[in-house]
Image 1 (cartoon, rainbow, N blue to C red):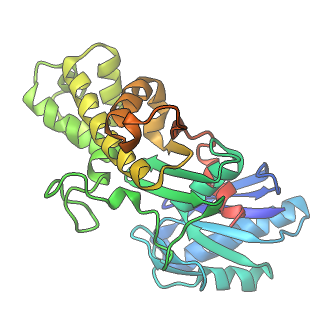
Image 2: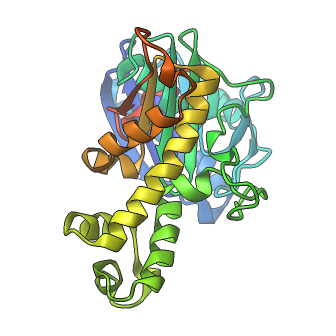
Length: 311
């Protein structure tokens, strides 16, 4: 068995995972990032130590998914914006403490690997996964293996530009897919529409304070038949589809997995999303050929843990 760890800004989630990708035992603790580097790395060791003591089993390896750029070969975190670990070799630290081989990877890449091993992309050779949350994370599987690129930074799909000169992104560019297709992007679009449609349910649900609008607000108003919410979702799906179509045109994966908080409303967006992607795919005129399947990711928060275990 292996230990997989999903290192988040709020929690460290870990589990023993068997060779088929099934979770055997799990644990979660607070990350305590506010207490600095040592608190975080000690937390990583703590979850490993607790799992080993609880199960009386020694892992053959430990994998850690990190929300940022990593140098997998060195085991070093290159940059992570929300944790005090930039420049820290966490693999070496955990390996010395546990006496087990340790490998690290980007958390979104780990989630993609998890879905490829035990989820919605199981058994395929080429797959792409995006997670639609605060940002847009991504991971690419080619030949059944995670594609991490020259320096380990491949798969930053949220940072391709889909609107030249568009919304400013945290990465420094303008018009990144993430600024439109993330949950944050959806909320931003909703706020813009609510300000212009103060007689809408979208505006009323936030009590006239557009800062209170969240993703759920949009879908609640949409399900109630609100026209402004319908237009917000229509624009959101258009931008989401543009990015997905770009990736399909470049890689043509067998499966394209969509995860993250937005995927919880899959039944509300699936048909429109497929239609919008189909209209932009290069292969839209092809007949009798296999097409990329766009599916909802199956593993939820476990994808990152399972993928990390399999690094």
